[in-house]
Every structure is written in structure tokens, then in C-alpha cells.
Length: 365
Ligand SMILES: Cc1cc2nc3c(=O)[nH]c(=O)nc-3n(C[C@H](O)[C@H](O)[C@H](O)COP(=O)(O)OP(=O)(O)OC[C@H]3O[C@@H](n4cnc5c(N)ncnc54)[C@H](O)[C@@H]3O)c2cc1C
Image (cartoon, rainbow, N blue to C red; front, side, top):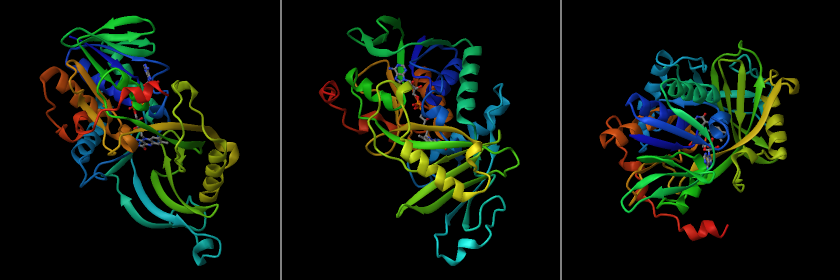
């Protein structure tokens, strides 16, 4: 059996890895580079039970435990480490707490830590670009074929999908998995798929060395008169990823053309410098943006594409794509090879739960 996976982000990489473990022939087709989009630009924060009470809970718990297992199975160092997570706020000018020392010694005065919201048992982090690359490399080492190219359509006969169109040619396959993140929207022209939207977020990365403790921060602060939530993730390699200020922007057709809004980056930098004296301009190493894939109901699409034998989709993981990638890859591999996912019930993520996008809306764009 041969499966073509469209997209070399974290979902495509994990799907390739688990499919190869079932002995399936796998070809990954990626338009730019492995982890070139959100999978290389995310924070990489993982939480075991922050989806409790939502349909994502079982997927997140399974994936959290796979993240803990994978360092023992795959070569490479992607900085998996347990973390403590805190919530709090940045005291505004005039607030009596403005000059009080922070509970966490590496933070500036006035950064008020209100609550511990994750422990080293329940929260962790990976470097998402290194994680995605390591999983893809493991899949390649087991025989996966990687091809750089742009998927432009699906090839079918009367009964089922038979392959994908790539740069004017055809790659034949017995099954196809769409894992193109927000660009999975394009696949709604080729099959009955609900809409997938891209939500843009800027982020910056500082290189502040490895003596910063593994403290993830979720802080409220005020900037230019509006309340903003900012997330800070120190990683094992000494880089600290900071994000805030999501906005709605048109998704460029070419993933390589995604660029940040420079005003948002400047505001993020000002907010970061207020958080800790370690976040100095000369320590800034990355300014970037990426698009999270999101559906109308906020849940991912994982499963068979309706009315299309041999077609599968795995996308729209929103803010939890790095966390949920291993269990998604495992579940899709089981669905394709055994007919059903064994560890996680995929029913809440069935693409058939949402109305398919009218393809004429895309052609008009
Ligand atoms: C700022 C930010 C911070 C985040 N932080 C976290 C976090 O801390 N924890 C967490 O769990 N998640 C986080 N996320 C979410 C996570 O990054 C995403 O959910 C996840 O990366 C999506 O992975 P993907 O493989 O579906 O898509 P992508 O990473 O977008 O990959 C899709 C791939 O498809 C390729 N492609 C597109 N079109 C084609 C085509 N026509 N042919 C072939 N290939 C194509 C693209 O080049 C791309 O490489 C964050 C997201 C953002 C934006």
C-alpha cells in the first residue's frame, strides 16, 4: 500500500512516522521545507489536561504521553523538557504592585505571578522545528520518500482516489492524506471538505541562554490602552519564544510568503522588554509570523473525507497542533491500515460534522 501525505508540517511528519511503523510505503510532498510554516514557528508548549472537558481531551492526553515516549524511540534532540506554568499580569503604571519584585527572580519588578497552572507532571515543551524535523528524519530513515513540490489536485477513477497532481505530474497512491495546515483550504476545490481558516500570530525569539528556568508564562498586560495576553516559553536550547497579538490577515497562497506585521512585532518587543531585563534588543534572534489552521467549530478535522474513498484529512489543530500531532499521526495510521483508530475516538473530529465549503467561493478568490 502506498500513501501520499500532502504537507510536511508536524502533522504530516507524525503521520509519515506512524504509517511507516505499519510498513506502509509513504511519500511526503511538501511545497517549501519541512516545518517551514507554523510547525517551525510555534512555541512548542504541551499540556496534558488543559483540554479537559472538551472533545480534545483524550487526543491531548494520548499525545502528551507519546511526546514523553518519543525521545526514547527517535534519534535527535528537540529539547523535550517538563515545565512549570504560571499565570499572572503585568502591573500597570500607578498600580501599587508596579515596583514590587516578582515571585520569579528572572522577571522584572511588577510582573505579578498569580497562580501556578501547570507542573512538571502536566506541562512540558519541545522545540517545534527540531521536533518536526526529527520525526520526519525518523520517517525518512525508515524508508519514507520526501518530494519537494506543490500539490494541485487529486487523481481519481470511478471508485476512489488514485493519486495526487504535483507540479504538472502525477504521483500514484492508494490513499492520500491532506495535512497542509491552513492551505488545506485549497483541497476543498478537490474534495468535500469544510473550510479551514488561517489565524495569523506574530512571535519573537530571544537567545537568553540556558540558565533561565523552565517557567512558561501566561500573562495579561495592557498595551496602548487595550488588554493583551502574552505567552512566554523558555526552551531547553536557551531560546525563549514570545507570542501575543493574533490578527486576521489574508493567507498568502505560497507558505514561503508569510511575513509578520512590523507594527505588531515592535509592540511585542516593547511588551517583552517590560517582562524581564533578559529580553534585550541585542538578544533578539527571530521576528516571524505564522498561520494556525482553524475550523468553524474550533476542533480539528481528522478522518476520512466524506464521499471520497481513499482520501483522509488531518488538519486544523489550532493552538494545539504541536501537542496533538503524535496522537493524530498514530490515529490516521491506524485508520488507514486497520480501518479504525484504537487509542482515540475520532468521532468528534469527523470532517462530515461540518458542511463542506462551496468550491466556487475559492475559485472566485
Ligand atoms: C505563534 C504560534 C504559536 C503556537 N504555539 C503552539 C504551542 O505552543 N503548542 C502547540 O501545540 N501548538 C502551537 N501552535 C499551533 C501549531 O503551530 C499548529 O497547530 C501546527 O503547527 C499545525 O501543523 P500542520 O502540520 O497542520 O500545518 P503547517 O505547519 O502549516 O504545515 C503545513 C505544510 O503544508 C505545506 N503546504 C501548503 N500548501 C501545500 C501544497 N499545495 N503542496 C504541498 N505542501 C503544501 C506548507 O508548506 C507547510 O509546510 C502555535 C501556532 C502559532 C501560529
